[in-house]
Amino acid sequence: MDEKTADLRDIFIETTGTETVTDEQQNDRGSLIDSDDTTVDDRLHAIITQIRNRFDDELSLSTETAALIARGFFNPQFNSEAGDDNQWSRIADAQLAASIDDPDIDSETVFDVRMSLHLITDADRKAPFDLDRLRSLRAEGMTATACADTLETTTETVNRLVRVIEAEAESRQVSHRFRASLANLLSDSALSERLATDARRDGLEPAIDDMETDVSL
Image 1 (cartoon, rainbow, N blue to C red):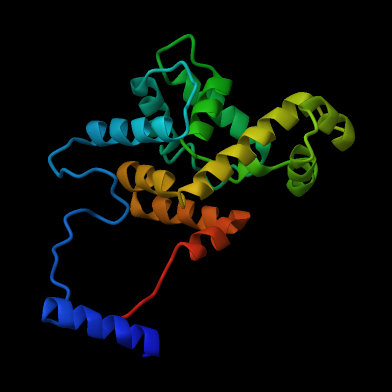
Image 2: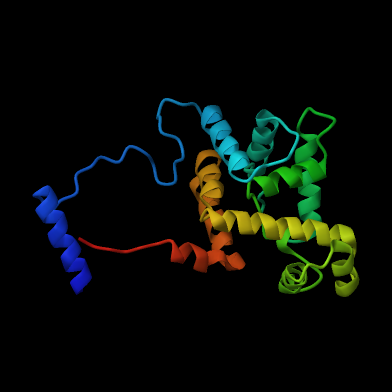
């Protein structure tokens, strides 16, 4: 035990008169909802509302529709290990859109909602160039068209990947807690762990580590 930790321990004992922390923890790890009496739908809608409020979501979709897309994303078929390339991601989005009884929902809508909810897959990150180059060009203020010319690709590809980069940045700002909450609520434990592993593997782990402390009393 170092000197600072020892000082904290002494202050704690002096203040509380005990060496043991006994406060009961009511919520599961990662929970954003206070009450255990809420249904899955209630909790899902609450998480989506918090995400949309936090990041000023401009999608003209109801929370109910966003919830349907979130549920579809966590369908094991969507998250099949076989799907690694960007084309697969587009096909999966189209299949998810087709499963929703709404003619206004297409694959691009599903993609936009997934990005808003930080539901990013490895397939979304697939690019015909190094994503760091696109990040640098955007940081320099280049337009999507200029980036496409420089990277010898299409403006559509650039716009899609920029949205992925933005979604990752948003998720990093909140230590991926919204993504984790959706995974804990809607998926089995194996899928939740896989998604957590994906988040670490995409280069965001340092941001998570910076948020963690380890002080033993």
